[in-house]
Image 1 (cartoon, rainbow, N blue to C red):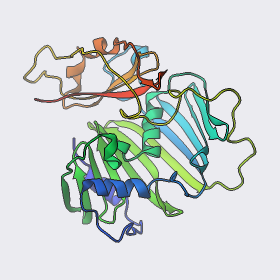
Image 2 (tube, rainbow, N blue to C red):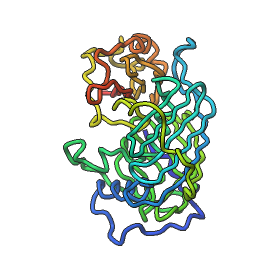
Image 3 (cartoon, rainbow, N blue to C red):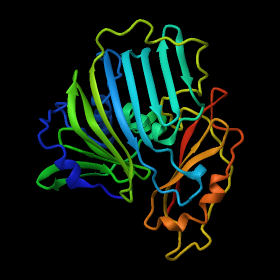
Image 4 (cartoon, rainbow, N blue to C red):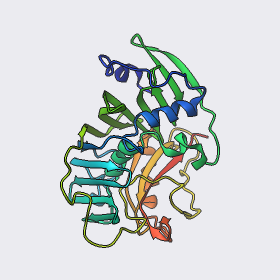
Length: 335
């Protein structure tokens, strides 16, 4: 896995960078905390906004011709109206999936055409809501501080600062996040604008470590203005804790997967399976949308994937005794 420096740095030309802090970060965690803060449109006291996103999802590498094994792909939309931390509305439409989630004084409620959120929807929402994973910007969630390697340099005459590798983050020296690598997914943040003191990338592009396209998204953000009466309300009871569009990390849920171990038939040599796999475990413990995110030889995973697709987890992932859906990345290391 590596950063693609020249293209993403050139894509930022013409943006008038600003210093987001008078003090330079002292370590990698401070770089990530600053980026998380400057991109957080939803912090307490932030200005109300209306966000619209048009995205296109690509099929990825699945090494299967079975229709049921394919990644759900095509065009989709996401729209969010945010007035306050506990007063907002999110709506997503993608293929046959449609969901609305709101929060107001009546609590958090959700309506969805299915209790399964497609993989690419979860991939998009992670970057829209938590472009810096919370366990990195808030190390207390992980229970320890990571020691990030920091490097600086130039590509195509443009300076950059690089934190880590995978996970890894590429910044302008003034703090703007340009690119991230996390568990085999490379994400570019380009066409940046400043909205009420917060940095917003108007274009998000995600691809696997083999440079196969995964998702592109074009977004606009504007003041919320006059919000229609009832925008933050839905009929019915409050949603179960596990029914949410909010991206989840391991600190949110309980999950004890089986101790099954997957080893390639040949543990060394050119046919050894090496790389990162991504799959979704749904609220019933069933595996969906299993793909190869990164591998120097993706075809080496072909003998392993059918068995891993058949995994069933009992109990499924849970939040407060409520089943939830999670993203699971399985890493086959070269050693």
